[in-house]
Length: 380
Ligand SMILES: Cc1ncc(COP(=O)(O)O)c(C=O)c1O
Image (cartoon, rainbow, N blue to C red; front, side, top):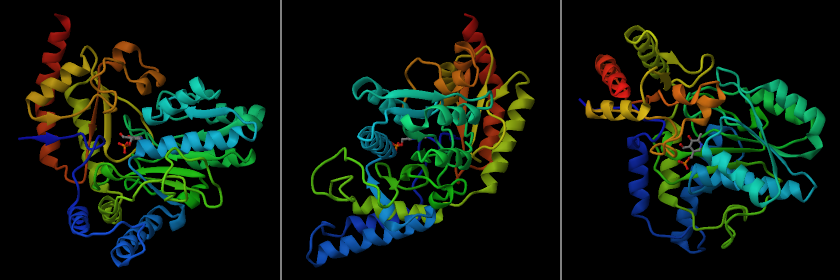
């Protein structure tokens, strides 16, 4: 039996997205062209834009299509920074547990553009320290270019109190960007309701295709572009729009609804892990995504666990796919208080809409022998 428990890395496309994409692939027309085929492609894109705007509760004109969540994050961070720097602000505030698609552009701004990057720390459950943020806004609010805090963490599934972040930021009129790549379609999310300035989404985490993302960016505010060219997408993101991927993203978004079935399978997995491996530790208690379980198995190496599970047909992950394969302990688990050693003994299992009870049972079946063998290998 083959079991895929890496849906947070990427999840299969849903049928509706495949149908929409396939149909669009057969259609001719550059959406920027004025002739009939061009206008037809433009109409399909604008319909998709309206669907996505409805799902995420923003205006259609606030949707900017990009080629990935990574690009949307880079566009938001660099654009917001360059705009604010012109107003004399150079402090960039992120959390200690962001995805590398936030940490790395923020570090780049620090190294190349004169930004001072300040990280908000998290508690042992991975939740940001609102007091640190509040104090920072009180003392240095007028220097802050923007705040970027993720909605849900990709390694642990822990959800951050974004409404409280925007409430604090409002006092200093500071723009807030939120990376919602993992939470979009899994828990409720409202751009307008949260009072955000910018929000990142990505299609391939919800059953849409790879290589299409969205930056939701507040109306009436313009930022410098990363890509210059044809002036598409409010001149923030030039480039011919990828109509097949865009219509497929909208089709997937329309179907993505919070699932209690995934949450109950997650709870079954957590209970089974605790029972089978009594010294295992689940990372991040509290409000979490329905589909992510991050567990530490003392005395093991996560790379060994991954390979042993793979040999049994089970695909899991050491955490962020982008840093998997590189022998580094997870910065997310370190920020939550893990030692290098315990962070290196941790695995992420992530569930999707196709995950079945049988798959969870099969995983729990093989886990004890896998842990035993990984511990023996570690002692050698
Ligand atoms: C929280 C988070 N942000 C950003 C990204 C990057 O998105 P994309 O794969 O579309 O570039 C990921 C992907 O794993 C993610 O989990």
